[in-house]
Structures are given as C-alpha cells and as structure tokens.
Amino acid sequence: MDERFEKILTTVEPFPDSIYGPRYRCSLILRDGTVVPCAVLQSKAKLVELAKRRIQEEMTGKGVFRNHPDPFGQIVSSFAVKANGVNEYDVVSTTYSTYAPPLALLKQIHGETTMSWTGWVFEMMDGKMYSYGSSFSMEFFDLPNGYSFADVVKVHNHSFVSSGGHLAPLTPGAILPANYRELKLLRERVYFTCYIDGI
Image (cartoon, rainbow, N blue to C red; front, top):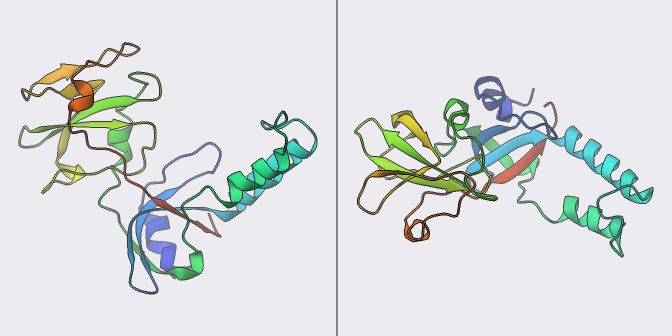
C-alpha cells in the first residue's frame, strides 16, 4: 500500500458508493505545498471499469446518450472533462479533513425535503443550532467558526433555524417557506477527487 495514502485508507471510515466503491474523505498536501482541504480518494480501477462499460453501452446503442447526435463524444466528455481532479503523483501526503462529517451524522439526514434539496439543522453541545442544506453532495460541509463535527449533539432532519432563532420544520414534498431562501445556510464544500490504485 502506498504510504502517502495508508493512514487514510486504514483509519477513515469509507464513504460508501454503489458505483465507485468505497471512497475516503481527506485533505491532501501537494508537492508545491498547496493544501486541498476537501478531497476524496477513490478507486482508479472502478472508474476505468465504469468508463469501459459505459463506452460499450454507447457503442452498441444501449447507453443513456443513444439519442444524442454524438453519444460517444458525450460519454468520453463525462469521464474526461467533468471532474475536479488531483493527480496521484502530485500528492505528497494526506491527512484528515475537518470538513468531513462522520457517517453517523450523515445517516441521520435522509430523504428529499423538496425536489433535489434536503435541509436539516445541526444542534451543537452549547445549544446553538445551524441550518444546513444540500443538493445531495454530502461528502464535505462548511462549519460555523469555532466548531467541529464532534460538537454536534443532535440532527434535526427536514428543519431550519428561523430568523428568530427557533427550530422550524420543513415539510417533505412541500414548497419551501418564503423566508427559507433568505437564510444563511451552511452548504456543501467543493472537493477534488484523486484516483488511486489499491482501493
């Protein structure tokens, strides 16, 4: 196992994915000293396997782009140019990411609040509550200043903190309240993927 990735692969709980296999959330330090605070280590072999399968589907007319004028170009584009990536050879070391919430917290957030959106509240040890929301990128999230995810004592699914500071429910499937869009929500963070061997 590559020593640059060993600590993360052996100590971080994998983020499960039915297509890409186990994914490991971390922070990367690159050769030039750049720190990438949110990154995912993911199987290079699984991605290659998926690309080959999807290309074969498109070539035989059974793929998702079969009605597109250039299905092969579309599938190549989706694998070649649509991802935020970090080259494996540019990584010097890995460390834990403070922006990766534990899976135990994420498992308490379930279902769509409204189409392609889920809202919830993290309640901290000191009783303060913070509204969160995501359009299903659940790997990394912003944190309020001075907190870590270890400070979260309760998850209020389908909820938000009103402008008056009170916990308010969101009704799954209903239209979001008018004042909801005006709230300061903590959101998902941009992350980069590093495809490696051995996963």
